[in-house]
Amino acid sequence: MAGSRTPRPHRRSRILIAVLAAALLAVAGCSSRSSKASNSPGGNRAVGAAAGAAPKASGRSHASSAPDSAGGALTAKTPLQQRDIIRTATVSLRTTAVDRSANTIVGLAEPAGGRVDGDDRSSSGKKRTATLILRIPPDTLNRIIAKVDTLGTETSRSVRGEDVTASKADIAARTQALQVSVMRLRGFLSHSGGIKDLVSLENQLTERESELESMQGQQRALADQIGLATLTVQVYATPAPVPAKPRPKTAGIGSAFVSGWHALVSTARWVVKIIGYSLPITAALVLIAGIALSLWRRHRRPPKPARAS
Image (cartoon, rainbow, N blue to C red; front, top):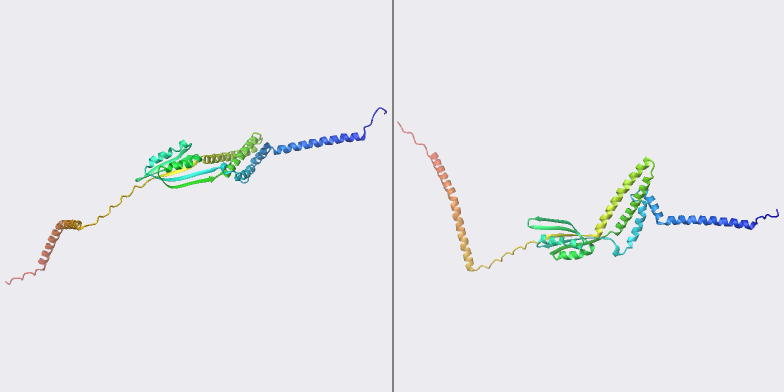
C-alpha cells in the first residue's frame, strides 16, 4: 500500500542490539549479587553452620578448623602486652610464729582483689606448719611476695609464667563453631518431618550441646587462671637454737685432790653396798656348804667292828 511503511533493516538491528545489551546487564547484576552474598559475613556463617552440622570425622568440625588456623596465625604475632599468661608462684617461709604469720598472709588477699583457695595448718610434735593458697591479680603478685618476705626468712621461691594465648584462641574458636552447629541443628529439628530424621537430629544435638558445655567450662577455667595468679606459701616454724655445752674448766692440784677424794668415797660406798647386798647370799651359801660337808663326812666314816661274844 502507498500509505504503509516497511521497517528499515538498520532499525531492526538496533532493536536486537538493545535487547541483547539488556540481557547481558541482567546476567551481570545477578552474578554480582551472588558473589556479594557469598563474600558477606552472613554467607560465611551459613557455610560454617552447614559444615558444623555435618558429622565430624576427626573430633573437630570443618567450621572450627578455619578459625583455629587463623587464630593460631594471629596469636603468633600478638604483642607481649596482649598475650595471655598464667602466673604461678611458690614461697617457703621460716618464722617464729606460724599462726600469726599465716593470718597476716591470708589477710593480704582480699584487699588486693583476690581470694583464699586454701588454708591448711597442722602440728607434728613441736613443729607447726601452714600451707596457704592465694588467688590474686597478676599485677599484684610481686608486691604481695615482698610483703610475705617481711614476715620471716625466705628459704625458697619459684615464680613461673605459662603462655596460653594460642590455647585460649583455639578454645574460643571451637566454642563459637559448636554454638553455630547447635543453632543449625535446632533449626533442622524444628523443620524435621520423619521420625527417623527427628531421632538422628536429637542425638546429634545432644552430643553437640554436651561438647559445647564442656568447651565453655574449659573456657571459664582458663579465664580464671589467666585473670588471677596462684601464690602458694608454705610457712614453717624456726627450729629452737641448741644450747651450747659448757667448756670444761682446767683442773688444778686442789681440784684434783677433791675429785680424787670424792672418787674414793664413792668407791667405798659402792663396796659397802656390795658387801651389804651379798651378806645374806653369803650366809646362805656357807650354811648350805656346812650341811653338805657334814653329810659327806658322815657318809665317809668307816663302820664300827662287831664285838666278840
